[in-house]
Amino acid sequence: MSNTVIILHNRLSEHPTPDEQDVMDQAGLVRKALETLGYKCLVRDVGTDLYQDLVPLTAIKPAFVFNLVESVLGCTGLLHIVPSILHAWNIPYTGVQEEGLYLTTRKTLAKKIMHDHGIKTPAWFSTSEAGLLDKHKKYIVKPIAEEGSAGLDEQHVFDASLPESASWLGKFDPREFFTEEFIEGREFNLSVTGKPGAYTTYPIPEMIFKDYPPGKARILGYRSKWEEDSFEYRHTTRQFGTLEDNPELAAGLRDTAIACGEVFGLSGYFRADIRVSSDGVPYVLEVNANPCIAPDSGFIAAGLHAGYSLTEIIKQITDCLD
Image 1 (tube, helix red, strand yellow):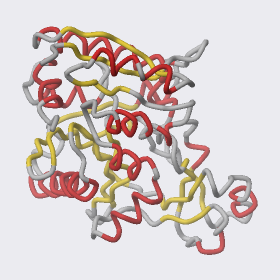
Image 2 (cartoon, rainbow, N blue to C red):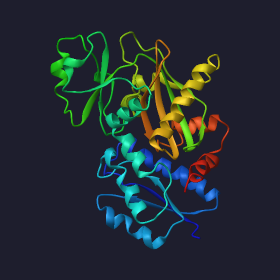
Image 3 (cartoon, rainbow, N blue to C red):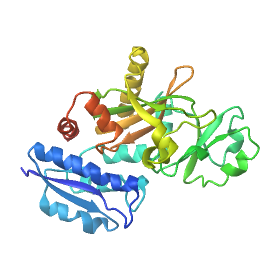
Image 4 (cartoon, rainbow, N blue to C red):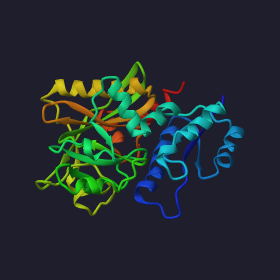
């Protein structure tokens, strides 16, 4: 059997943004871990010519592909295509399979599936349905099939009672954006490895919005993740141990994350982003299949907090290969 692993990522643009460049940090971490596990690693990327970029993999006949592809043709919503091709060519690959990737990257479809299976998620509407919004609530506009924080910041949170909200909302293409009820409350990120029936949940961090002034929307937007000189980046922190006095809520969050994995058939690794409303109800904001595993990512932080080494975290992912 081959001992070669292909670490596959999306090709960077000519002038990559910080969030795009981040995939190279992931590839470096994965390579180091896999080499520690005794594999020979080759790093390859995929650009606009999928066939030309992927067909050489068939000649290499790797033991498996470690899939770090985050977008295809510049679109997150197409990231399931590469796994589909690998599957058709009988090349094993790590992480969530093609169907789970497709379902979770279509945010409104994912929300419908969660709702149908009894998993609470904030109410959602088309951006063309301003008349259906509750005038006593706040809402947020999100992209339907792009990474959640892409171009997203507090200006996308709005009060439905404002008379100008309907015309402002009408500027967003309903084919690309949707409206979601904005849940005021605590936010938690649940990192999970494994496969249906056998999941491991990592310690639960809470996102702390420190010194946010009254009225400022508390969201994990682009600035809080990538713009190091911004207020949001400097005042948004990850904190473990905040649920030690509330084991019931912690258990409920873990159960919710596992339920998401089971419903979507997720294998390898995923993250569930959950907000708990003021009345203690957990709402799943998003299910992130194959989330970022850069050294400074929340997923890796949770794994390290659990006591695992970087190599052990990556091995948990590769152990899920069928």
